[in-house]
Amino acid sequence: MGTENPATAKQIHTAPSAALTALKGYWKSVRDLAQVIFASPTAVIGLTLVILWVLIAVFAPLITTHTPFEQDYKLVNKGPSALHLFGTDDLGRDVWARVAYGARTILLLGPLSVLVAFACGVALGLPAGYYQGWVDEVVMRILDAFMAFPAILLYMIIISAVGASSFNVVIAIAIGGTPGIARLVRALTMDIRTREYVAAAKLCGEPDIIIMLREILPNCRGPLIVDFLLRIGYAAFYIGTLGFLGLGLPPPTPDWGGMVQEGHSHMTTNVWPVLCATLAIVTLVIGLNMFADGLREETMRYQ
Image 1 (spheres, rainbow, N blue to C red):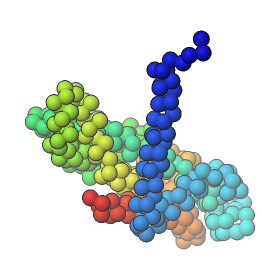
Image 2: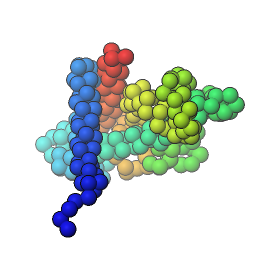
Image 3: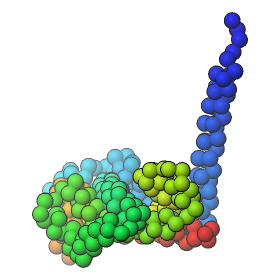
Image 4: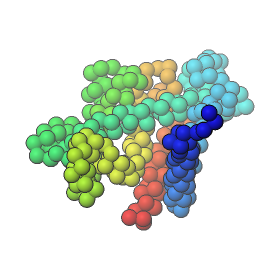
């Protein structure tokens, strides 16, 4: 009575130390990433633009005085005023409110569609690069068939076939992005599979799926993170393009591309809806591209 089991005491003391070590490793990774980002002026400028739009999306209800659906037929196609910061559109809706809430749409659907594309691309590219042979041939020929279509044409065919909705836009962009991601993962896998630590894992009898997920995929993360950021910018651009073509989100959902499509016929009397939506798309895409380019250039110095 009163004696403590040495094994139990050791487990109690080891658990906090292991958690502390993991926490220190996490914060070290965060500090290293911050160091890489802030070492590149291009990445800092791009990240600032992206964070600005994220903040606008998150705090849209607080920084707007109207809802994006509220209509005032007495103030149709009006310019900026104290009541409407960037004027109104052809239905009397507040342009600033539609831009702010539209940021939520694009910042949700863009990353979501790229995540789905990455999941599919990794699932196809890893086994193709690891096994090669007939597996590689089958996967690559299927992906080549999709890559034969220009991206925007492929999106138009898919949306026209299944209809315009948030879900279908995500699926269309994911299908269009999967071949490029799969080819990138395949190329990285073909290089990494020849490394000594992969051979050591094979000698230890590790299953192929474990080797691919534990040894190969984590060592692809650098190029994949940069590609992920670039593809979010492409996705934002394509969502806007589909909205302009009338194949994006169904009205009255706030959609930057849809705002351009709705307002371009009234540009002779009111340019503000088109101008604001266009600047929103441009600044977000430029911000994402600058952040990805700066991150890629800075990480290449450490290779």
